[in-house]
Each structure stands twice: as C-alpha cells, then as structure tokens.
Image (cartoon, rainbow, N blue to C red; front, side):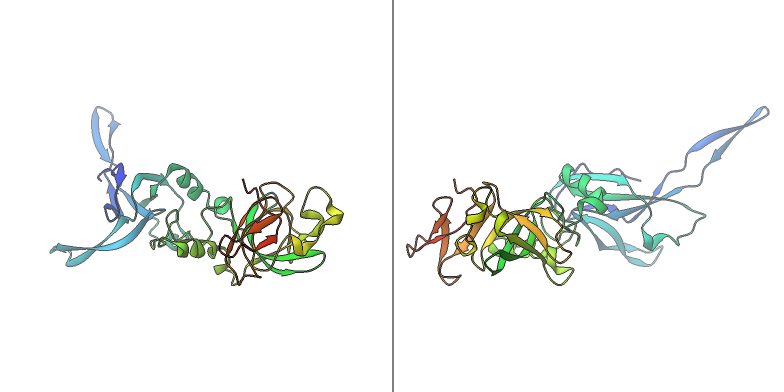
Length: 286
C-alpha cells in the first residue's frame, strides 16, 4: 500500500480502486515458544468522492492477462483527503470472510469535504424556514406574486451530486452566463419542475404594508432575492422581501422585452440604454 499524495492536479492518478493493507505480525506465546502469527490482510476499497472519478488505466500485466486497471483520478486542483465510510449498498454482498475497509478519496476545499461527509444534511436542497432563495416571478395579482424558486443560496452542493466546480461530478460547468443558468437549474432538474412560492402584499415591505401595490414592486420575469418565512399550504412556500437586502436583483424593461435595468434607489430601476425607469422593490442597490 502506498500513501496518497498531499496535492493533486486534474488527471493525476491517486490510488487503485482496490489496495491491500500489509498484515500485522504478532507474537503468540505458547509456553516457552514464541510463534509469530500473521493476521489476514485487509482489503482497502477506495470510493471516488468530491473532485475525483473512476477511470480505466491501460496496463500490460502478463500474469493476469489484464489490460486495464480501475483507478481513482483527480478532476481538479486541490488537497487530497481520505476518510473512512460505511460500505455502500452495492457492496453489501461482498465476501464476508475477507476484511474490507472502505475509504473515500476527495480533492478540494476542506469545508466542502465536511459538507460532503454529511450528505443527508448538506445536500438537501429543499428550502427551509429562514433560507434565502433566488426566485423568478411568474404571475402577479393584486394581493400576491407567484414565483418559481430557482436556487437556495445557502446550499452549494445540490442533491444531484453537484456537477460543476464545487460538486462531485466529473463534468465541469463552462464559464460565462451559461454556467449560472446551468447551476441554477440543478435544483429543479431532479423533480422535473421548480419549487413554487408566494410573496404576499403584506410581506413585501416592513412598513406601510397596507399601501403596497404589487404591480409597482414586481413584474413577471423579475429575478428576486427573498427569504422563506413559512412552508405555506403544501403547494407554495411563503416568502418575504421585507428586508433591505431582499427584493428585485435583476429585471428587464417593458415586461422583459427591453434592456437590463439597474437599481437607482430603493423603489425604481433604470435601463441605461433606453433611459426607461420602472418601479420595483429593489434589493439594497448601494
């Protein structure tokens, strides 16, 4: 068994999928004779974690007539981490007479490694009370705005293994605007549709709640930063923007047909191309 490297670069081979831990030699005292005894060797099975993947490495082994060896390769630059894990469900039926130890190899940031170990908690993308989310306005009425939840800002590793820079997948997200669109869509790809939410008129602002005009705060297509205040009625989350850092963050003029607008104050956004100014409930423009 060889030690793992401390640092890894993309494409570097870290370890074979299976390795053998040298047996420990102990002395068994029987009367006046010391008989050396060897324990059964331990098989170590490495599992690919964050920033790694399994590949078939070509070899020339005449003794086994094997031309390929399954190894774990790094997919990004970073530190190498190894920790013990429970046996995966696919390997429960392995030979119980052999002692097998399971270890997961990951490459990347130590904080992400901690989140990856607690998969049941850190990879849960369901919005909870208090979470800040990013949503898109789909419909406006006099009393509320219906939205589609796109992303939960406190979760950076979604349940689909997080294909991308910070995830466990092997396909990296390309740069540019496509990267943001790709990562935002991960939350809805598994269930086939986005989570839905409602921003009620009394939850738009912290003051003058009875004077809120919804059409002056949001328009269909706006990207809004909001906070989950309740799980709602089972079909929609109840959201609020009654905070300075919550509200519209991206919007286009003329109901989405115009150019991108930027916040000029707390209640209005302006397009620098056309000069059109529209009312919005803006999120901390300064």
